[in-house]
Image 1: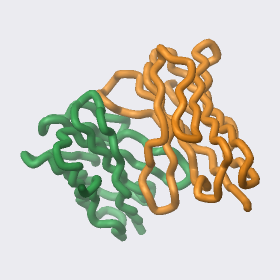
Image 2 (image 1 turned 90 degrees about the vertical axis):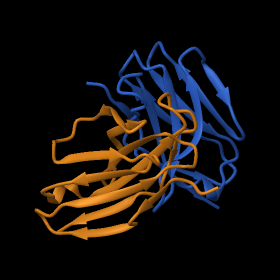
Image 3 (image 1 turned 30 degrees about the horizontal axis):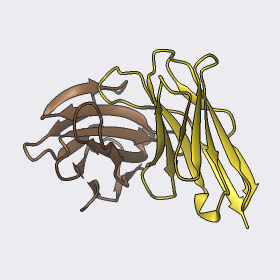
Image 4 (image 1 turned 45 degrees about the horizontal axis):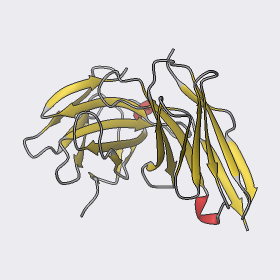
Length: 113
Length: 113
């Protein structure tokens, strides 16, 4: 079975642009969470979605948004990119809201220049 | 604030030695703790977890100890191997915001043969 898949794997954007990152959860998983990992630090929670609704949000500005589709895949959108948004963006899926089977993908490396 | 931190940014050991990686947490309401291993270019990989009603949990070559009195978590790796070289993070879940995990900064384990 495929694990959590994220696309693209690498991305370079210019300041002020917007970006869309995609995540496909493990088959059967209904919850998706997004994290930002800046180089040298631990991942920081951005969003959790379960059954297509936002269930949790971390301390990130409104430039960050996400959604979950009927097939439980998810998109993370970031508008008006800043240099400080350069990071590894990780997606994690789980069976349910409680987090059973919590598994991370390999992430999307975003570089803002 | 709520945070999880690791005591040492780096740890170097010889192959075959036992490794101990430490972590301090500040949120006494946290009830679930996880250790992750992250290799370069990959997402965090689950190693072992422990709930707050336990003091110790063992897996294959790994043991997690939880001391709630001093809010301390440790990961012990027996007979450390070169393949154990990676960054190790502890993470906590306080039960807020769904399955949002709070990560520390990580300890880089280097194993020399």
